[in-house]
Length: 384
Image (cartoon, rainbow, N blue to C red; front, side):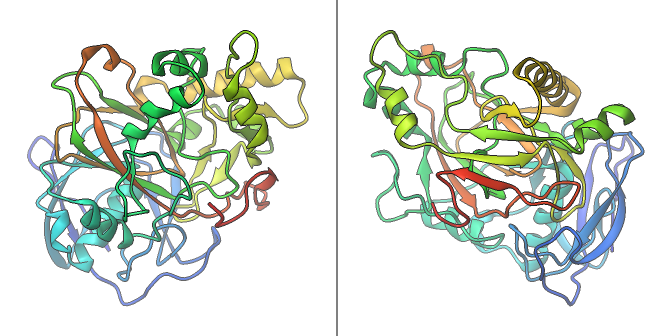
């Protein structure tokens, strides 16, 4: 079991973990041992924390979580929450030094509890980044990456590759971003959300960042769901929505190479609007501004109004956390229970921002009724 030891002002949580004897097995929301936890956001909603589940994340140590971390083996790490519903900074661990199983279990529990955790001053190289990620699951290997990504390390994608995308389709990068982000909430997304099996988690490492600007923001979709009124929760529990690559893109006048690319490489999936988290049992408001196109069974006008309301709910300030990057910073987030917003305030600063990410293979989302997501086109489980 686990528990918190707090400082006098309640701001610092010292993580301890008791290593259990079991390892994870099973892929459904009903697998593993369930322990009731408070969602920590003051909602009073009790969720089922399942331990011993190998379903996106993996660990050889079985641990529980009780709004903090436990007793038993002293890990030496500190988990300091940085916002009320989401985000914690973890100190006292060198990610390049092959952390002990108990430390890995504590980090995993922190990710499940706080949805995104942050490390500073890390000295990971590409191989170390992949090795650390592999402690939690199977890294995704992308078939195509840009020229900025490291050769010989196919699990690592360098975000500077994004700067090449507009040029591939005859646009400056700024124009390409502007046409993709035509609304204020358009940039909010989970990674690869149009796939039938989106990544379980992402680990992003900062190599070079501007001296100011370039922050990333995350939102907790479990807290957003819990914050809805009862009648609205009951209504959205039964809805499904189409997630499609390229939704909302504003074409250029005349021939547009990016439109042709989207038509030739369509990716779309029918996902539940509320998914059940495979490890915690939490209900997650599975919306984002980047991929979600249409709620099934509703008119376009009805769908648009409801999606706008739910997305505004998801990104309310109280459900978000913003992180100021430094060289050597690492962010590790649960892609099943968060959406995030990449920065748009640094393009004019003429300072490089080079980040490297590794994604962990995920499962097929499951709705409240137990039905799994359905591929519409261009996506299959495990095929990248």
